[in-house]
Image 1 (spheres, each protein chain N blue to C red):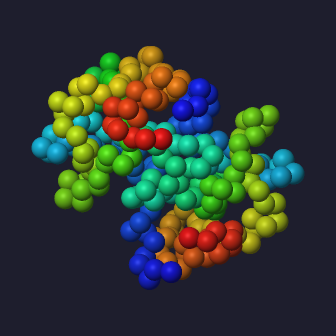
Image 2: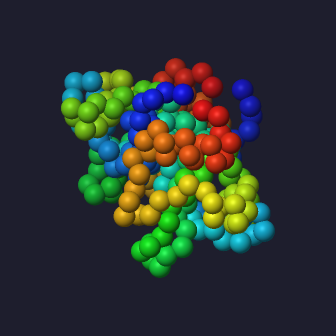
Length: 117
Length: 117
């Protein structure tokens, strides 16, 4: 059993939601809207980043695998381990057409980020 | 690769938050306020249930291990695999004294639910 305080290891979903996400050049990509998690195991699969638009209208949402995000305390936000140019080609959807994460969409996300599931 | 649609397996944190939790007798225990997740792995450790109080004032919060919750589609909510009497003795905190999940509090939660971490 570690003597480390557990609070440094766990975080509230309420705190993750709304946190900014930056690319590795420090550019603001958007913020976390919500997480997508495995119902059975409770494993977070994607942080869904809202990006662009005005007050959420017209914004695109990008599901990014949790493993592709690192928290940067100096920025007070996550750094996505991919650049903004790469994100331009990443699987996304608009708020008015939320996908059901059917096999094809999930595969396109996992495939894009090289996640083997 | 499964041919099952992925949407039956994953769920938004925004949908989990606010969902009611029942005991195995069908009594309403409260609702999920937020999730606590492992920062590094993205594994959800606890669903924090808000229970009692009036409009959240005076409510107690109970971190319940994700593995102790099963979604029941007929109830439209989670069933906690413990009864209300057991919950009365479970680790909790009041909203005005949120613990930092230091080692002792985390251990008391995991110990109570028999989670070996």
